[in-house]
Length: 110
Image (cartoon, rainbow, N blue to C red; front, side, top):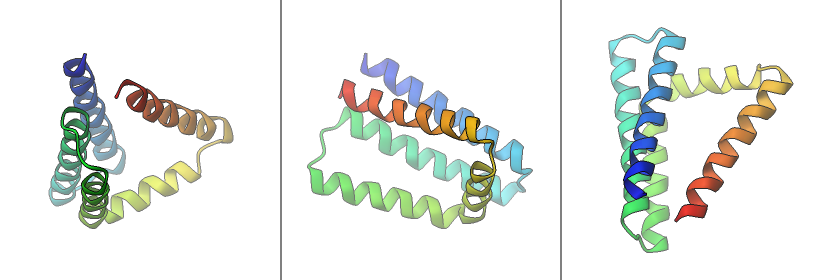
């Protein structure tokens, strides 16, 4: 079961990173930064599922991963946040519900 969840996380993050790159027409440097950010987030999610961290180490790694991701792809995150804010209300609610249910699903299994 853990293997399927890990593969699902890898595929989901890779798909989202590719969609962000295509949607924003990023140059090579920005594409590399998004790729590095996606790999960091993927590694954090997979290791948090497969390895039991102490809570303090978990939050330290979480904050470090998010900070590094924001530093590497700050402009892309801003563009995506503005795009998210400008979605029609129905799509905005669907996105929020989808990602909340995804987080709940991962936390229920582990």
